[in-house]
Length: 391
Image (cartoon, rainbow, N blue to C red; front, side, top):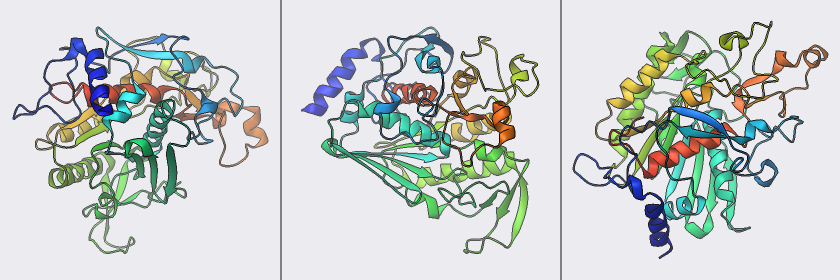
């Protein structure tokens, strides 16, 4: 009954969007209750300053945010980055409803797979849902590469699996993974994918770790020796190879009549102020307190890698992959990175303290913040998918 009421509430909120979101055989996609309005591209729009509606939760009230993302706790002097709301251009969709999402996930397993940006989105989702859950009704644990959140009253789990390159690699340790010489196994990804089986909702990402050099080392063969039969491949070509492996795995292991699959696009960095017209030496995200206003702005995110993502995932016919396009919306948010306001791997040196921008993190995002908007897009894609499953 509770699930039925949740669906009815979602349908009532979604009345303007109740055209069919169907698969090729005419059946409604799993979890879908309607579809985005025709021509509604939720990845295109603008950030609106909204102190009434944002943030969606308080940093100190969410127990799941790691110290690397708690900017207020680490002395950030402003809070303006928390008050921006993403508004798609030309259309609006129902607001994120934590209770409805929990009911829709009742008895289900949702799994995020990817890198630290994907983990931030995962944590953001837990914070968004935490508000709607009674105290003591959930549990959380991390074992090696797998983190598991259990919503006990809903018999649901929301999980994160660390696999920054998706394929087996020398970056797979969940803690000791500060590696520049990237090595992946070119054989099937059985070591990782055994954890993915049985998920009702899969959310992948992979981009950042492909951008640390032009070449990737590929280990051929299926044994456990990660030191022999190694060839080099261009990063773009290797990325395409791995995405094809993911698609093949999906085709063989996911039932599109029961499960949904998403891929979150590249999260941009803001490491050079020159890209948005700041000519000051060494300028970057440090000290920024407002988004970039130029709607046409595009930073250093690789268009070639985004093109590969679209080409490979767009060809996935049996198991459609919904592309959650967070790249353009995030390009504007130079203000929302953790900068120097997070737990540091090592204490800053005197030289760094004298020049904070020299050690500012312009890759990861404060929470609450930008990843909350990513989850709104995911929410819309899950319950109101476009007919072509892509933005």
